[in-house]
Image 1 (cartoon, rainbow, N blue to C red):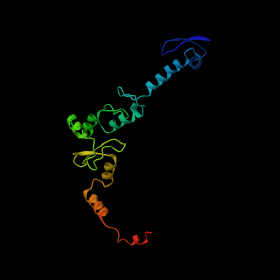
Image 2 (cartoon, rainbow, N blue to C red):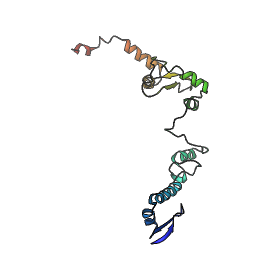
Image 3 (spheres, rainbow, N blue to C red):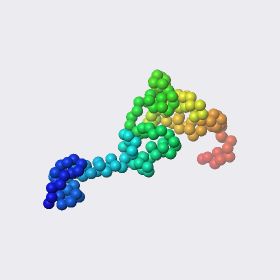
Image 4 (cartoon, rainbow, N blue to C red):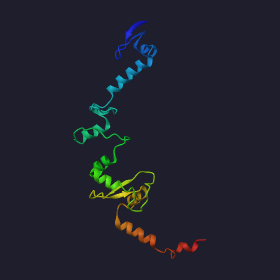
Length: 176
């Protein structure tokens, strides 16, 4: 047995070799943790403050994409972290804080009038061609517009179809 010093935390440990020192030292997991931390630091994106895994050229996937597009590297959005709705509305739709508050004040679907979002949160409906915000929608109405490709002609045809009689269709003669 030899006395050795952990190169990361400088604790003195007894060991035959570095591996045994990491696993059999009195604070074993702490030294293993030191090594894992050092490895992690060597394998993260080189962009300052980014903790994502390093890929090619020392950048994570997101920063690598920015570099390939010729964009200046900037902090990536962190998904799964709550951001204020007004901030998100400003980033996505250009709405001011006041505009976002006014839009979200009613929490009522602008199509069907539902007071609940349908379990998937409220959706800010906007024109994809102009970017103009049209209103706040529940999940069902937002999906409905999406399925009709935001096309008023297709939606009008669907309305006419729903309002039609359909009793004259030949297959209705076989309804029991």
